Length: 434
Image (cartoon, rainbow, N blue to C red; front, side, top):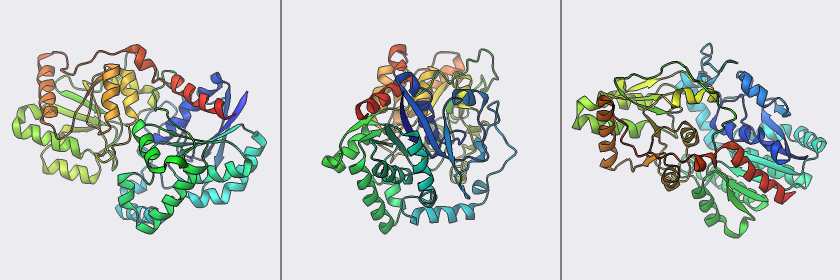
C-alpha cells in the first residue's frame, strides 16, 4: 500500500473546522490504496469520542508538542461520550484584553505564530517522514505556516506535494485588511513560493480555485477543487433523542457558533426588519446555535430588541449532529458577506440531514448545489424576498403546514458529497503524482 503524510496542524481532538477535513480524508484513504500518516500539533485538553478513537485506531498520529497554545475554544471540548465539557473556561474568551494582545501579535507576525514551533521541530518532523518513506506529502492551511513547512520538507525530501487551500490566504478580502503592509508583503511572497512549488493545489470551492488561477496563472502547475463533505460513516443513528426545539416557534438552526468570520449581524438585522413589519411574527422566530453570541453581536441584538430570539445550545460531537439537524424547521447557512469565495463546511452536514436549507452566504456555487440536490434556497441578504420567506415560514409553522422552502432531495446527488466519495478524488490526485 502506498503511503501519504498528511500535515494537519489542526486535527481531532482539536475541535476546529479545519480539523475535520484531514480527519475525514484519513479514515477513508486506505480503501483507495493509501495509508495515511498524520502529523499534527498536540491537543492537551480535548479528547476523542469513543467512535472517533475507533475510526482512528489504525492510523499513526505523530504529535508535535507546543509550550503555548492559544487556539482553544474550550466550549467545544467534549467528553468521550460526545457531550460538552463545561468544567473548563476559556481565558481567551473571558479576558478581552488578553484577546487583544494575541490578535495584535498574530496580525504583525509574518505568516502566523505557529511558524516558530515548526522551525524548532522541523528536523524531528523530517526524520520521522524519512522513516515512513511516503510517496506523497499533503498539507492543509490555515495555519499557513503549515504550507511553509510542507514546502521546505518537499524540497529536502524530493517529494511531490499537494497544498490544500481551505480558504483564500493573502487573496482574502478580510485578511488583507487586517494585516499591516509589511506583514502582508511577506505573506504574499511566501504564498507565491508555495503556489510555484506545489505539485497540485486543491481548494474547497471553485470560486477560490478561480481566484488563485487568475492571480497566479502560469505559476501554478495543477489545480482542482475537492469539496468538504459530510461523513455517513461518522454519523450515529438516533431513533429517539432529546427534544431540542419548541413546537410553538419557527426554529432555525445555525450548526456552529457565530463568530467574527460568521457573525450573527445579518440575521439580527433581518429580524429587525421583520419586527418592524410584524412584531407578532418576529416573536415566533428563534435562531439556535452552539455557543453564546459574541459581545458585539449581543449588544447589537439587544439594541434592536431581538436578543431573546437567540438560543444557545451546548456543543455536541459531530457524530451526533443528525439528532439535532433533523429536528430543525430550517437550517441556516451564513458567513461574513465579504467571504464570497468560500462554502461554509456546515452545508454538507445540512445535506445529510435532508432538512430545508436557507442560505444567505454570498458564494454563487451554493445556489447551484442547493438546486442540484433539491435542498433549499439561496437569497441575497438585502433582498426583501428573504423577509417574506421567513414570515411565510413562521405562519406555516403556526398552522402546522410544511415549510415554504422548496425541497426535492436528490439522494444520488447528495451521496456525491459523502466523505468516501470526496476522498476518492483526493486519492486520484495522489495516484497521478506517485
